[in-house]
Image (cartoon, rainbow, N blue to C red; front, side):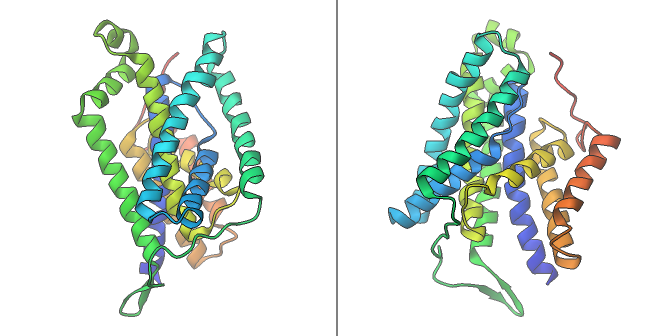
Length: 290
């Protein structure tokens, strides 16, 4: 039982970690917060469901198509709504309020297009379970772990070993100095929202085959991704991954050994404890001063 729970915990932790990465990338490059990540995940899950089940695309093609669409969505979102708000004299708190409004709009849009009923993915693999002695594991859980970890590794390589990634990190550290060096800070900010949206889309298509897809699926998951980012150190890429794993393990083990009724309470209780005793998170990430 422990191994099965642990595999589920790692998969959930990977999803929370990807969402936490998205929160952190946006914050580090622009100093802004978003509360629409959960609903972006939900739209990604619905897109994956549409491509895979309704359009009969191979799963990897559906995954790639979802990532591309969500990437473009995030970039356009930043260049239209976010830039318009800030350019019109709005402040970061107005951006937060706007993302809350967008999250509600996305929920209603999903209900309008796909209905409010739970939609089930067809099986991705021909076998229902992988057996390792007495242990049975759904192959979708294993594939979810692989996709989540691969996404984290690719993001690490992109941010640290490409010119664009280096430019994004430079813009995040000092936007004025980056401008002087010829870095397009505006593009870097748009790219950060695009990457964040793509990560949420990946999370959605990972969790969709396991738990189904429905309009409210992102509400609680988005908050847990935020909790993961805070626990690890808000804005720290590696902290988001670690925080996601912590939240995933805590809630999964609580559900397995105590009761599923307590898993959300325990996960958010740990989140509150971190806010009280160590608000800078495990990696001691400092708050950006405006």
